[in-house]
Image (tube, rainbow, N blue to C red; front, top):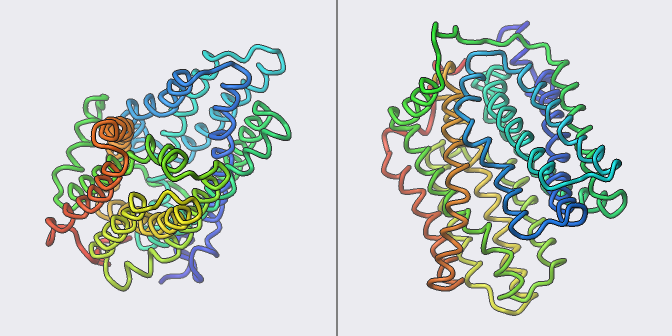
Length: 421
């Protein structure tokens, strides 16, 4: 390792100033986002009188516009410097969220305002995540990506543990609009941290003419033409669709079928963050020992096996809670190992000039498959029952691994060092 190369300092990423700034920005905004995820529906219910259908529309506003415009964002990310895009996305989110406490102060919080804020923040969040996905690759170099993604997933797990609790406490103490104002300032803090990053970015030369249709074709082509990337995409798409069954079933099953109280359910779900922390710590070690492909397959199989504890849980609350906590800790840990290694492998294999548009293809798929999976899970539960549907979920997670099993020889266990810079 040559001296003077800031992006590969001695002592690992804990001594990498620019990475620590990005990591800190992610942590601050991740906690803040969980606060708003808790406070925004509460504001809709208590301040704007929202019902169940209104809350459903609010969720759609948060997710669907970003998914629809993801390829447009991917093209922007591939052709422009990512740091200004991330700073801009943070500031847009802050301004949009601050409109809610401002409206509350004037006594004019309405559902259309909340839908508009959700739409703007959802689109800005999409752009931030795409830019961040490419920026970290340029910031630390491809050799350090696995370490970087593990550390970033760990801070996200901490946010998942602390953010909802902080959001609930702030709502109880300061009201929902003020809790949302706190989140707005976390995005300002994130923008200031990113602004202090010194790394000069590498941006591919832009084509003479680039249209939205070109970006869509490029995003799909770079994902589908490479057998390894295609297998990763199909495995993750299958996983996303099947795990989305949880969105419509998990809470209902735990409360109505197993008899857990809301407090018991909150503790159970919170344990998933602990599993995520463990998975983030083990992801790099697993890849070093077994290689990327075997680690990905093993993580999916482990996640599938532990999912069967959910339909096996008896309707005795304290025993059922034990089953569900085991699923949360082990399952979330295994899936965190999968996601870290899957993200790192495609960042290493894809051409740098198309990373943003390829990530947009992933984001579009997730944006479409998540609501489709939630709806399919609900319809299946109505047709065959809750427990059989949860068995189908576990089988679906196992089937995701078959894409990687079938791609033997295409998905590598090791990426040659000569291709990593």
